[in-house]
Length: 118
Image 1 (cartoon, rainbow, N blue to C red):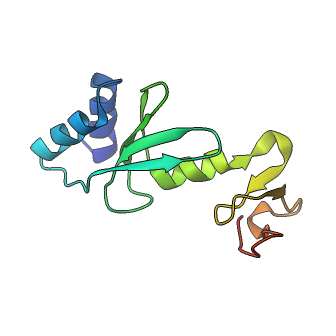
Image 2 (image 1 turned 90 degrees about the horizontal axis):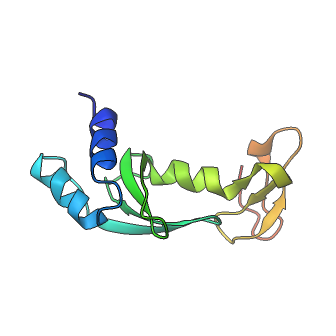
């Protein structure tokens, strides 16, 4: 079984259980982790099991609903920072919202801090 499928199976089985208990289960089956971390996006707050890399597949838990999901915290941050319906993007550096570049959103530069946010 690949790692993604294994994490999905564990997340489903232990949905709404404390995330530190899920981390202990991963450690017992020899999946190395680096503790529990916190992620705040414009839409939600999560706790997630640190796998050592921003885009490493992991288990996240919504702090409010306690629902568990399998993704990377980097993907979640990108997905929830980009507001498709409003044609807005939020700068991950300073938090300011701005209109996306209509031609290519990946070339959007923050008007406030001048970082590339696309």
